Image: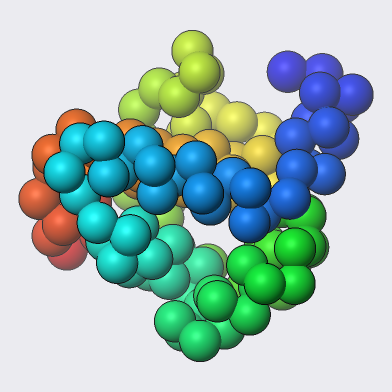
Length: 119
């Protein structure tokens, strides 16, 4: 992916992407709470902080730059999202975004929460 499309993705409003994650999960009989759990696991946000970030309509770049602590086990997330191996993505911000995409994909595919959260 080139820098222009990276910059476009980085500018997406987190609240809008979040709604898409929730819709995807709910279509597969998973819950908004499970989506929140996955996001909080990856980013270190607490539930109230996550809700604040959604309300403030910040972009993905800001959402991840303000994240309290990216989970050290996020490096265990492997696989393909949008035709790209997440473990091979060079741009650290794009990698975090794709990690989140991958976690929500796993949730929607019915994977057990312990496996999704790399426990």
